[in-house]
Image (cartoon, rainbow, N blue to C red):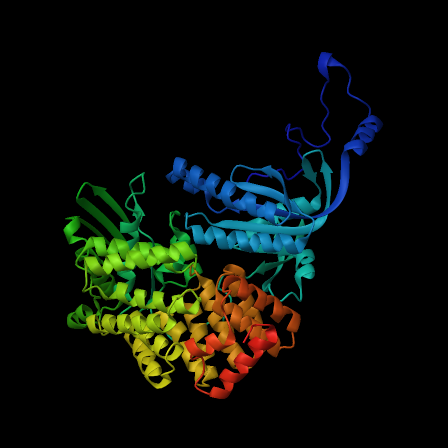
Amino acid sequence: MPVDLGGVAPGGSEPGATTLGSGGCEPPSAPALRSDLAKTAKHLELCVGFVDVVGFSALMHSDEEGTFYRWTDLRDEVVLPLMQQHGGTLVKLTGDGVLTTFADPVAAVRWGRELQIRARQRRQGLSLRISLNHCKVLRDGDDLLGDGVNIAARLQEFASAGGIILTQSVQDTIAGNSEFETRELGQLPMRKLGVSVAAYELVSDARYSVQPTDDHASLPSVAVMPFSNSRVDQADDYLAAGISEGIVSQLSRQGDLTVISRSSTLAFARQAIEPKSIGKALNARYLITGTLWRVGEHIRISAQLVDTENSRNLTSLQRDFDQSDLFAIQDEIVESSLVHLLPSLLAEERRRTLRKTPASFTAYDSYLKALDLIGDLEREAFGQARRHLEDAIAADPSFSSPLAWLARWYSLNVGQGWSNDPRADAGTAISLAKKAIGLDARNALALATYGHIQSYLFGDFETAIDYLDRARAANPNSSIAWLLSSVTLSSVGRSDEAISAAERALRLSPFDQRLFVYYVFLGTVHYDAGNYLTAIKWLSRGLAENQRYTSGLRTLAVAQVAAGHLPDARKSARRLLELEPGFSVSNYRRTHRHYSDPGLVDLFCARLEQAGVPD
């Protein structure tokens, strides 16, 4: 990011330089300059923030106009409005970045965290780096000067894509605040300043949330990057995304391969592919990349399998086909990938890994649109998601995934308190999930959803665990199968296994667009295990990303009561009742089956009442 590091004023003169006034008069004396400066300059203590777009020059080179409009939209619709909401002041725009200040460092950190969440959720293919330094500055008119400003500017170069880097002064301010988690980066050398600065990274996604384990450590891992769409009008974005998602789905059926979730790779959409850095960020040994071109009904796909350790192209594939043959190309890409990754695999075994594909493009398109809308828990968009899923089912009744997601939709509708008839919706959910399994007995999403509904809405924990076990066996790389398993295991008292399952879900999808669900589930299983402070940390992080998730608010309230934080619990309960005015403890008992032990149900409900929820 081109920034003013030396206190150069907007006119561009170097500090200390003199200029001739109009008419060629002699410059004023040094004492006069100091006197004029004293009249305008102010010494302040502020939190200085820099925002920078990662790889902006390369993005501009590949798509100048598209990159310009994506950045200016993100800046004007998200960066600057959020800055104002959190009490920040704009100092200057610097082409691909923003320089701002905050009086309160805590507000600055909240701004940075929310900005990264919103930028990730927009999926515009732009990754941001943010640096924050609480320091003394000298304001000279519209400009900021001082070592603290220079340090903040240099520090952002060390931030990871999508990351927030903090100085020791900011870390000291937020230390002990349970809503923030940081990791120490050590002493970082400031280029051209001749000093080193202690720095910390705010944990804003799941990369560092849980420690990796040795399971699957020896297996090759592959990340399917979002296929780029060559059309300027972006009309085929859904088609390109569908090809990527289909490849992920098919590869994930192979138990001898670790596949990075599609929602994680979306963080790198529309960026120039740099295999080594992306491979390191995703912990992927191989990347599948591709491009889509369409002219009328004619489609061309090119795809490559790349070794991230040396950026070597292992195999390439280019095919021309009609829209009616859309899904055949996915099988070819999967087959080519498996040949390179698992050469000993027999052809018959490879064919069994290929996932069933829908017979209709219209069904798949509707399915993808629903996935974009269902998880944010915006009431209007949530209703649209159901209609898209119903359209997909009507277009292709043999396609099991829309049925599984529609079952999830009804389960969420009950969980959010939006259902007019929870008992009927629970019955619809279980029927849809069972139908999805009938169409594809190895559909991990359908198996996991059926199991989750059996425990969450019907209290049949034995059946639930059987189906959740089957889901994980069908697809060991399904993050949602591990996630849904975690709360059922927790409900029957298997807390260690539940925590392990929730952590594994995070490891499988560390860049998920909707991390709030993963955080809330991990908080829930820690609450059940009696780890109340840890539960509060995870639940708070989930609700910081999405305050509309009522399940998280319920559990946060009871965890706060259990930890003795009654004022905080009452605040959480008030927020819950704002979102779900008709919520009561008695209704909750009738519609949810949270534990196999009735005593734990009674305790949960008693704590809800202590938090201020009406009976």
